[in-house]
Image (cartoon, rainbow, N blue to C red; front, side):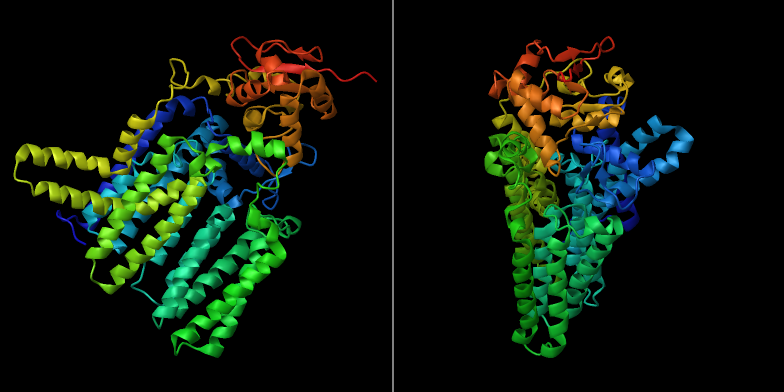
Amino acid sequence: MKDGPIFTASGSRLILIGLWLATCVTLIAATWQFIVPLNFRDPDDALRLVQVRDLLAGQSWFDVTQYRILPPGGTPMHWSRLVDLPIALMLAALEPLLGTPLAERITLVTIPLILLLLSALLVYAIARRLALGRGTALLAVTLLLSALSILIQYAPLRIDHHGTQVLYGALAIWALIRTDRTDGRLGLIAGAATAAWLQVSAEGLPYAVAIGGLYGLRHMLVPGRWRDMRNYVAALTGVSALFLFGTHDLADALVPWCDSLSPAYLLPLILVTGVMLGFHPLTGDATLVRRALPLVLAAGAGAASFLLVARDCLAGPFQSLDPIVYQLWYLAVREGLPIWDQKPDLQAIILVPALLGFAGSALALARTRAANEREAWACLIVMQIVAFAVSLSVMRAMAFAHLLALPGNAVLVIALMRQAQRLRLPPLRVLLTASCVLATPIGASAIITALLNSGEPEAGNASGVPDRFHCTTYATLRGLDALPPALLFTPLDIGAHMLVYTRHSVMATGHHRNAIGMKEVLQAFTATPDAARQIVTDSGAHYLVLCLGENEIERYRTLYPRSLSAALARGRPPAWLEPVPMRPGEPVKVYRIARPAA
């Protein structure tokens, strides 16, 4: 599909870089009030920096335990060193030159923006491989750089794994839709990219299966496609094993975790690859049935082995949480909930850009005549369906679903604009042409938010930073950091901030592998002050720390009006909590925990 203006290859690259630079300036300006104080809005980003600091301070590359969460044993993390690596390399290079504070800020701004540039280049490359003209491909990039549902994963200080996994997913999709080559190299790229995605997050599992299914379908329907199928499963298996044992010590690598790539998934994958590669020479490629037989046998063997060794993983990693942790923590993490548990405006924001992308992709498929191009669009549409289904069950997955919709979004906008330009009446032509912006992700999201969002703006001060973030910065925690290093009893949502801004340890953060610590924290803050005393004093913590007005405390105070949280919110701490004065202007509340009498 060709569009109007002709762009040269070098000119298109310059335009893309210019669009990215303009987006960088906008994002930095919009988040400057968070960058300067190094104010993390998401605890995962804060804890990621803690993990990188520990790595640079000498913690083993193979040890991803966070020892300052529920010490002394610590908490094994399900995070990947692949995400830590670029952050650590840039920090190691900049710290000797700039000092730690400035080096950290530059790194935490630069890394997400570099990932955004790479994602923009992949979106452009995907659009071009779908036979879209350079102008339409640049429009797809423009839509990416204005889609808030995607940009939120690439904002400055957003160093958690979400942007990285979107990038790996985009690389796998680029390789998948390359239907012009059948030498197997693209299967290798898709397999390696998907393996990296799985190492970063187990959320890549449905996509890995879907990509493998598409390669398998191609192999069955079109003779000569075996090498892509073979190389995909071989690379997926081999690189997954390499990443697992190359980033974890042997003891941890052999634990069958359900929330990350582990033997629970690797063993069935090895069996799938072995059966497929073993039976293919015996059946050959002469007929569709012969081509399909190794795939069917491999899929059956993989499913059977998964049920045998990892049946518990079918319920997901969160279903085994203690009821109080599941109810008060997991169900309060909005980004992990399905669409039916979201507010109406957010439901529409999840749905509309993806549905517009479906319409554009279907239009492009209907107009395309070349066999390779039709196959590429068909594969993209299948992956759009998979990503859309995942985004319905997990809200944070909408970033990838919306990225896959971008080529279709661009096609739809161009088609609507061309129809509008055909109108003879100038005022109507101008009006309808301008109205095409409503078919873009940002236009649709803006109109939806305006129509459906009735919530009150979040309280803040003149700096534009919401009040709930003012308690967790370097500036507001200096008094706490000045105390001798100790174990803190804190609510879950601010635990990671205590680790990044102070030298203390915490009982728990909002990370599910620390099931024991999370349960104790939730029980204590929701129990009556008398009942909470036993839990808190038995924990071994020296101080209880909280931020009044923080969302988590407000929720407990409302749900449990007689609880410790409610008493602290009213400014009436029990006698066994001794207030510790902080520096002037520091809003954090710190209490020394009185040890029980002998």
